[in-house]
Structure formats: C-alpha cells, structure tokens
Amino acid sequence: MTGSASVVDRAQEIVAVLQDGRPFAEEKARIAPEVLAACRDAGLFAMAAPREVGGVEATLAEMFEALVVVAAADPSAAWVALNSQICARLAAAMDPALWDDVYQSPLGPFGWSAAATGRLRQTDSGYILSGSWPLMTGVLDAKFAAVVSLLRQGEELVARQVVIPTSQLAINEVWQNAVAMRGTGSHEVSAADIFVPAGMVFDMAPPTRIDRPLYRCPPFGLVGAVNAAVPVGILQAAVDSAGSILRDKVGSIFGQKASDSTALQELIAEAWMSLGHLRLGITSALTTMDELAERREEIPLALRATVTGGPFQAAAVARDLISRLYTRSSRAAFFAGHPLERAMRDIHAVGYGLETIRPLHHDVGRVAMGLDPVTPSF
Image (tube, rainbow, N blue to C red; front, side):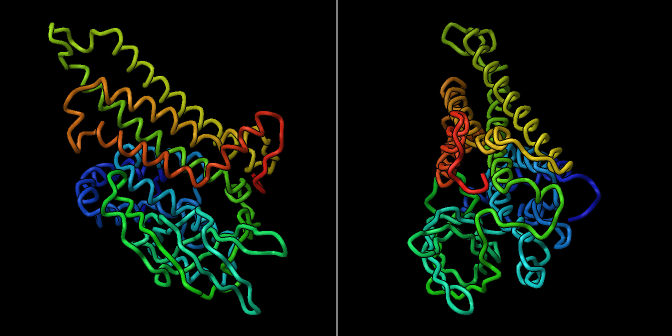
C-alpha cells in the first residue's frame, strides 16, 4: 500500500486498470495479474486489517464507498476484495504471535467461505478439520483463508471460523464454466483431516484484542458494509451504460428518440433515484455506526439490522432495475461483453452469493417485528 490518500481515493485511481483487466478475467475465469497487484497496492484486500499487520483499518463507510467504485469498474475484483475482509479483520482477534504466518506482505487476497459445510474435531493439541466448501473466491491467489465449520459441543453443533493455509486445501477448479462474475475464480475446495492450532479457530463474532472503532463495530456490520457495495456498484455501471445508450438511441420504427419516450424517462429516473437512495442511505447508516463506535456508545439494534440488511435490499433493487434496463435499452445489450449484458449476469450471481448469509436477512425481519435476532452477536 502506498501514499497517504484514502482507500476511496486509491480505488478511484485504479479504475482504468480494473476496466482493462476485465477481458482477461472473462477469458481465464481469474482476476488479472495487474488488477491483483493494483488492488494489493491500494490496500483493498486489507481494509479491515489492523495497522499493526500493515492493514488500512478503514471505517465501514470508507470500505463501502471504495468497493462501490471497484464494483462499478469490475465486480469480480470487488468480490475478491470483500471476501478478503473477514480474514483481514480476524487479525484483531488473533494472538499477535501468529500474525507473521498469516499476514505476510503484500497483504491479500484472503479466501473465505461462509457455507458451514466443514467439520471440526477437538483434540488435546488443537483441532482436526475436514469437509468441502462449494465456492471459495480467489482461492488460486490467496495464501490463507477463513472457512466456516461446525464443532460439536455436547449435544450442540456450533459454528466456528477456521483460518488455514490454502496450500493445505485441495482445489477442484470448477469455475471455468461459470457465466457470471468469472474473475472471482470461485472454485470448490476441500480439507481432509487437517490439523489446525487452537489459535486459528474463532467464534463467529470473536472478542478482539484491539480496542479501536472498527473493532468495536459488530462483525456483521462489516459483512453488511462490504456486501452491500457490490450490487450498488453494479447498478451504478448499469445506470451509466443505459443512460448513454438511451440518450442517442432511435427507439421505434416511427423514428422517435428513446430519450423522448416518457416511459423510458421514468425508468431511468427510477433507476437513478433508487441508486442514489441506496448509496446515500447505506453510507449514512454506516457513518452513524462508525461514529457511535468512535464514541464508545452502544450501537442500537435497529441500526445493526439496517446495516446487516443492506446487501439483501441492494441486491433485490439492483436485480429488478438492471433486468428492466436490460430489456428496454438496445439490442446491442444482448451481445456478450456489453456493459448491460455483464451487469445482468453479475447481479444475479451476486444475489446467489448472498444466499450463504441469508439467515441474517431473516434476523432483520425479526428485529422489524420487535423480536430478538437469532444470530449471536448480530
């Protein structure tokens, strides 16, 4: 990471690199080497990592804004970056004696899989991990990853996050046949009786050893911030593309310009306004959470629910509007590689990717009904 500019500024500085790297990602189903290097240098893989390990330690609002910029240029790169933040943040909970192993310069990317499909067995000296995870973003470029696994405690199965070297995982390269978010390189991985030191196994919301604002925010605040950014960024790219198309398009056999169609004007207006409301609303909620953490004040349950539910609302709104823009814009959008065609593919893939954390959305509904969330440390 170089320079004193904010992570948002650094994200804006590499937009051209991100855009230029998309053809490679589409062809190879993997993030382009120059994009990987640019994201590392900008600190995008380590926004949630503490300064002690060379991380950015950005605010939640800064992470959201930076990833919106990245997602508008290359959603796959943004997805690799957002998945990196879970392992990056765990440095604040990890014994510093283990930092040198996991947080090697240059930082990231880090893998993550939220599917609780692994199994842990406790031993006298640590844990034994086995299982398979259907998708792990960026695993071919990550040296370490966090996976969610289940540990039996008496009659109960409890979820744990396990940090492991990716060199110990078997990688089944399935992503070459993906039709969306191809640059994420989200391959299937598996572990067969891997020994894991006790210091590499964490609760889903572990207490941190570092008492600074970012680490006073609930972990699911981080999940809400980074996951909301990608659908918002994809919607931004779609609105920009549709607007430029419809501005000059002749939209009917009678020669009417598309820009003179009130129906299309209303659609663009709706998309533009929805984008603005999403972006401003999420930023406002995250800024409030950041400020409360700075002042050591309690973060209200309603605010935690608003932030946690942000990705699901953003994905639903973006999916609907992009679908409508795609069908109403131009026949050019039906060809592979067109910005709206890519946005259409990518937003549906992002919606699928959020399914692994869908229980958080259910908890938002519980809070809205005046009930307590089920997820610990919501």
